[in-house]
Amino acid sequence: MLQQRTIKTITRAVGMGLHSGQRVEMTLRPAQPDTGIVFRRVDLPEPVDMPIHAQAIVDTRMASTIGVGNAKVHTIEHLMSALYGLGIDNLYVDITAEEVPILDGSSSSFVFLLQSAGIELQNAAKKFIRIKQPVEVREGEGKSLKWARFDPYHGFKLKFDIDFSHPAVDSTGQSFEFDMGEGNYMRDIARARTFGFTKDVEMLRTNGLALGGGLDNAIVMDDYKVLNSDGLRYDDEFVKHKILDAIGDLYVIGHPILGAYSAFRSGHGMNNQLIRAVLAVDANWEFVTFDNERKAPAGFAQTALAW
Image 1 (cartoon, rainbow, N blue to C red):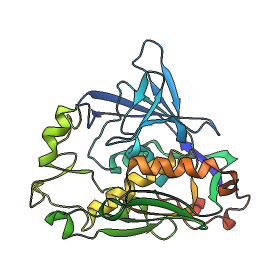
Image 2: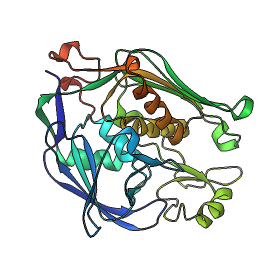
Image 3: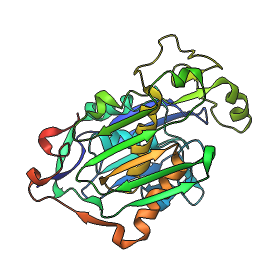
């Protein structure tokens, strides 16, 4: 049987929120089978649980935000991406502020935390959402066109195309495809950092965003070049970060996905629209498990753990 996974021991991290600039303590705790990923605001007078599911996303401006009532957790996508990359099904995420810490701006620090805690196989079948027919969402036309799409596929792969008119981005790869069965998440995707432009910083900060951003947790560009002294981690780091984000955004559906995702200029909002569109029609999807891991797609078997 292809089994569900959690972590073996509690692990913690302290950092700063990318947009809020607030100090935040985050504790990752093991969870029982079929719990899913549950964020908990433990700093509130009464702790609030926020289970991950597509409809729990309440804001997608600059990040994916989950909320229950007045309680929110911003910027969950990098941690969610790491959880997908390492195959974690069940986890409690306790945090002491309204935003997941940005750490180094990628998913690699979260991968390290999860590896340090250890991965535990659980006595329950891993449950997948299998895409049964094409589903697409689109916005705009011409130069403003953007879209995201799922197609049936026995595995999980993503193809993303970006379109930035900037010398530093244009000189790198603007299209990348990653197949979970052929690539290695930790090596190929996890180290790609978020990025931004100095021309946008003043506007963002006026709107209470990017208050914790800087060269130690983002790729920062002026009108011509990358300002980080260490340059890029990947030749195509920009498009790889968009794939990293998409993996995290799509995992908000609540289960690992069997399907092929493709997108052009998509973002957090459109990614959430796509998974809601999938769930809106029963014929689009089905739950599947594998009683024999040899029948599972490459990359998901216990013998092929990404970590």
